[in-house]
Each structure stands twice: as structure tokens, then as C-alpha cells.
Length: 390
Image (cartoon, rainbow, N blue to C red; front, side, top):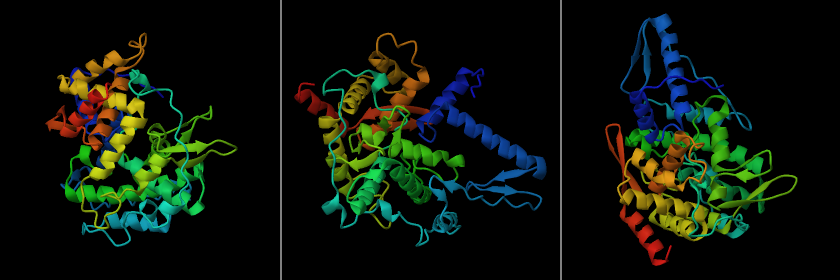
């Protein structure tokens, strides 16, 4: 369903500022969430006449009414397990302390068997070569906006293919990994709440939530951060675009890690591998270095994106609007009028988020205003390209 409405410049600015915090993927999600929240408030007000939003984010109702109990929801693979329901209750415990049963699922942990038994597959073929100009509409999809889910999925695939000693059916991998990712998302959200990080820096961003209706969050995670097959039989995801996984074609598409994906999966991670979950950093320096070297040498589209954005920000296009204007030059000739501003903003925002995860840029927030700054790591990335004549 498509609904059009008039939007004042002030409202548009507010929408853009909300998207910059990376909690929502696009305008549609912001508007949908706002409408759902308003409907919930109106429903409660119709019976209680008063709703009090407490500092801890909970809702207190007057007239002695109790909040509704959360209804259980089904997963891609069937009904939720009792352990997941227990985990959700533990996460909401008023003590603010993680129960021993609420932890990073085993599927995302390192184990001694991974390195010796994973059979890596060759990376996907590429239509681009390093140094080639690549149109913005062909850059990695903007909604693939975080790299920690990619790390989690690579680790999960390492465990799954290690146990099978072969590739795993794509649908099975998508269902099993996205199901466990809900629990991981709960653990990370609890950690974010305790550490008080800003939304843009939250570890749980892009992971599915147990509150997502109709399995929307799980399906999105499966499609974006594991793999999905379209009607033409084409396989896509962030892992595919970064050449961390590939698939074997046949009656059933089967996923396997590439050598790069295997190496990335085996590197220790400060979030997944710290039993106390004390870190607010998504990646170790070794992981960042590996991904930057891999992207620079083997992923031309992402390398081009990083270099173009870094150059534009350094030249003064250091705000969302300025950067969007600077990036318009990379839209294919003849498509300037057909590509929407929201698509351009999504491509820019997704790339900036991935670059932020890799410490190439930082966002500087002053109220609702956001600006970008190139880091020392970003400067070194550009300098390396110059030295290589790109």
C-alpha cells in the first residue's frame, strides 16, 4: 500500500535526523513506528485516561490496569523454544543483571573444531575491477548498514559447516542463524542499555528484536546478513557482496564460507568472545585491519565507495546533505532524475555506517545535526590508494 502526504521542510529535516541515528532503515519504518506508537497510546488513554512514561522507558497505567503480557511469536523455523522465552524474561529482569542462561548463543562462539574442518569455497565472480568507476546505484545496498551482523553470521556458518563438513542449504542456514540472532540481539540490547551507548554506536543495531511482528526482523536479518534467493535464482546478501560466502548451485542452493570468510570467522571478536561482554567496541584492530585489506584488494565496489566518500568528506562535504550532493556525480548518466533522494540517502547512510564500523570515519552529533570526519585510519586508507596509483 502506498500513501502520499504533504511534509513540511521542518518535518523532513526531523525525519532525516532520525534516520541518521541508524535505528530505522528508511522513512517508511520511522512513520510506521510513529503511527503504531500513537495508536498504542490512544488505545491506553481511551481506557485509563492517563499514561505515564517513566525514565526507564516502561509505561505505567492508572486505574489499576496492568500492562498486557507479551504474546509469544513463531520463528522462521517454528515455535519459539522455551529457552528463548526464558531469555526474554531474564533480559527484562529489574535487577539489570544478565542471568546465567542469557548469553551469546553457542552458534556464534569459537570452538576448537572450526579451523581444521571448514572447507572453503572460491569467492563470487566480480563484474568490477579495482580502480574502475562504479555507479552509485551499483554500490552495496544501503540497507546492509552494519558489519557486526556479518561477523556473527560468518561465525555461525563456520560452526554449521564445521559440523556438517560441507556446505549447508541456504534456507536452513538463514532460518537457524536468524533464529539464534534474535537471542544475540537481546543480549546486545541489554548490554547497550547498561553501558548507555548512543543509538548509532549500539551493538544491537541491525540484529532482529524479539518484538518484531510477523517475523519481519528475522526475515530481514536472514535476507541481509545471511543470504536470500530471488525469483531469478540470484543469491544476495552483505556476505555475498563482501565475498565472505559463496554458494553451490543445484537443486538446493548451499552456502559455504570463502577463504576470506573463514579467516574473518576465526578471528577473535571483543563482543562475541568475551563472556563478560565488557567491550563497547565492535571489532578488534586485527579484524578491522583484515577487512580493510580484504576490501581494498578483493572488493572493488566497496573500495571505490570508501575512497569516494573519504575524498568528498575531506574536501568539505561533511554533512548528510552536502555529501549527498557530492555523491550525485556518481549516478549513472540518464538516471539522475529516476533515482529518488531517499535511495541516494540510503546508499550514503549505509556506506557511512559500514565505514564507521571500520573506523574510517566518525559521526559528530550536535543535537539533531550530524557531521562526518575522516579518521587517521581513513587517511591511511586513502594514502594507500594514492601510493598504488588508484
